[in-house]
Image (cartoon, rainbow, N blue to C red; front, side, top):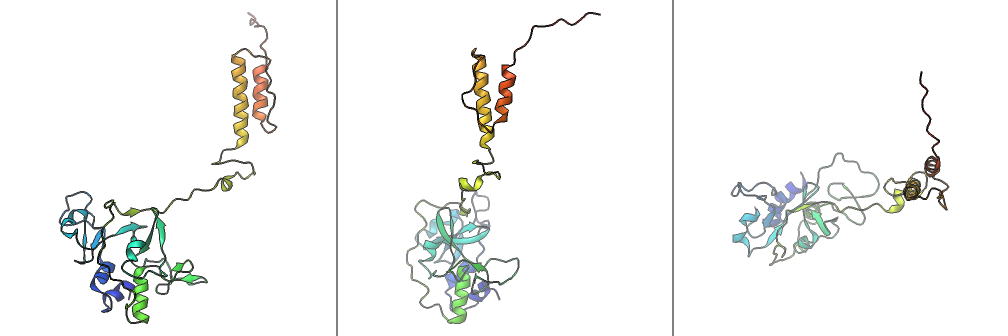
Amino acid sequence: MSPVQFVSSSSHAPSWLQLLLTEKFYNACIIHEEAKKNEKNVYCLDCCISLCPHCLSPHRSHRLLQIRRYVYHDVIRLDDAAKLIDCTSVQSYTTNSAKVVFLNQRPQARNFRGSGNFCSTCDRSLQDPYHFCSLSCKINYLVRTKGSLSGYLFECNYLPLPECGLDDGLMTPDSVLEPAGSARTSSGSGGYGGVDCRTTLACTATTEIVRKKRTGGSGFRPPCRPACSPVSEISAGLMNRRKGNPQRSPLY
């Protein structure tokens, strides 16, 4: 039996929690199926139903929880979850500058338990010091080992939506820019993004020679040539070679 099925069949979990973990979010609302942005991504704790943004008007005074999507799975903000349940030891993830926790266990390609830290319910690999990969895994563990959720659920009489309003709820992992030191070329020269500084120096020297030739400075020699820029030396030789007198081709 999965953690969600275990919790939903348990009499120790309140109805709002059972339905929160079993509800299918981000399905189109059948009442507003013709409207745009009709995905059901809000959960009403008082009515124990999922809502789309167009269904919110009668529920404005209720406790509302926005459900978000992270890597194709339902998550909620850690700040919101901590008002309802003790989230200690549940691994959180940072996305869109906010910490989120997964509602349910995620499927795994294979169950392989090596060395390290793992979820106490589903054996998913975790970072230290976490012991659960989702809220349902922790709830499953508490009901199975302690037989009750007493002391782990909090009374919350006020849970509004964010003041800035609803967003689409689609969250992406934060991007980490690769430091400049890790982008150096294999030869050890200081480069970034695959651009070699030697090519840059050669192109700069050639440009200066062409500019001087066009302004009449035929005897110009660059005061300092890069030692590692053979392109600039070849270009300088070609630019300083004078033409001879024109010769007429012989007539036969």
